[in-house]
Image 1 (cartoon, helix red, strand yellow):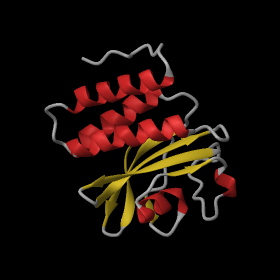
Image 2 (spheres, rainbow, N blue to C red):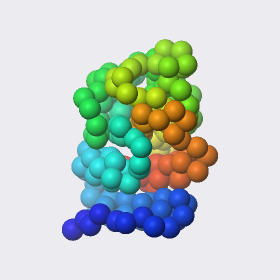
Image 3 (cartoon, rainbow, N blue to C red):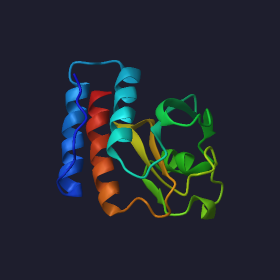
Image 4 (cartoon, rainbow, N blue to C red):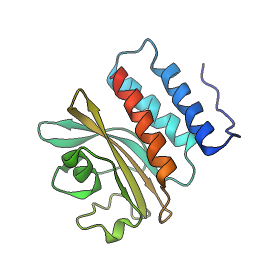
Length: 159
């Protein structure tokens, strides 16, 4: 049974705690959709000042909406469009302080102001991306990026 945590340590300690929770949720479960659903829910309850968190899965040359928390979202994203497309295409994290200044930004939620997208890579293969939006400008910093990349790295081991 999952219990909501009270995160009272440093940001780094709190991220480590969430990564530990994620590993526990993934333990013994091989279904990709179930695991991604639980991880999007875990991140949604952990991260403050966000309005969308979820996954896009790489299928037949494009990103297709996967498990998420937030308002309904764009279903398909070509790799040549948006922050998600760029992260998938370049296979690198993309952090955007102001999405309205990002050329080709895809506006699924008008409230979104900043975004971070981390590609899910397993043995060099693109599985998809983790996408997190915030209604706050410059919401994501180096600490978020470091620990979200670490979380994704641990997650892809289980996928």
